[in-house]
Length: 174
Ligand SMILES: Cc1cc2nc3c(=O)[nH]c(=O)nc-3n(C[C@H](O)[C@H](O)[C@H](O)COP(=O)(O)O)c2cc1C
Image (cartoon, rainbow, N blue to C red; front, side, top):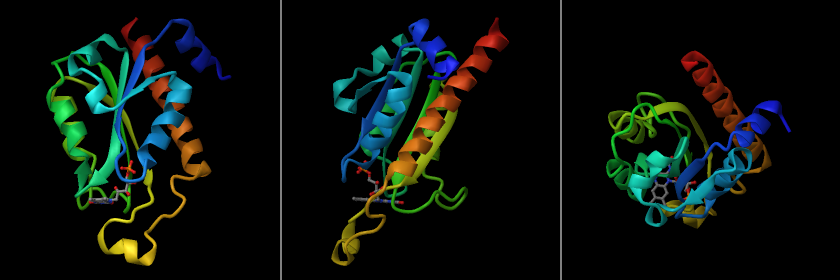
């Protein structure tokens, strides 16, 4: 195990991942891969109280992308979060189509809510997810098999990068 992961576990960092994975359970696969590294609790929006998020050292928020944004249960959950002062957070998703900044920047609505509440968003991760939405169903859907093993490995690496950023933050504050 990498030293940084060991260190954060030793000091008892508490992480939570709030994840809505409605369509095919695609985003939950990412949540589980990320949670392996962070030893995070995974909760659906209905299972967590927004007020308790402030008790964690790190909070992740993710879902599939629905009509150009995160699932409404995640956005509503974020709107009910308390004001915090720089609590580290990250955002993730799976989607049918790639994220294109300015045109299809589907993380933006959630990030804006989180930053408006005082969260410090340390990173974002997305990959393709199997979709049979609408007429795609007739053709067997798109992105069959995604997220795949490679996506999950990238998600674990993303979680490690979040730990590296937390470490930098800790150093700059001490
Ligand atoms: C109702 C609906 C709307 C969707 N809208 C989008 C969209 O706007 N952009 C996109 O890239 N994918 C879209 N998708 C595809 C999903 O984001 C994709 O399948 C995702 O992996 C689902 O994640 P989940 O299984 O965790 O819910 C949509 C899927 C559904 C069912």
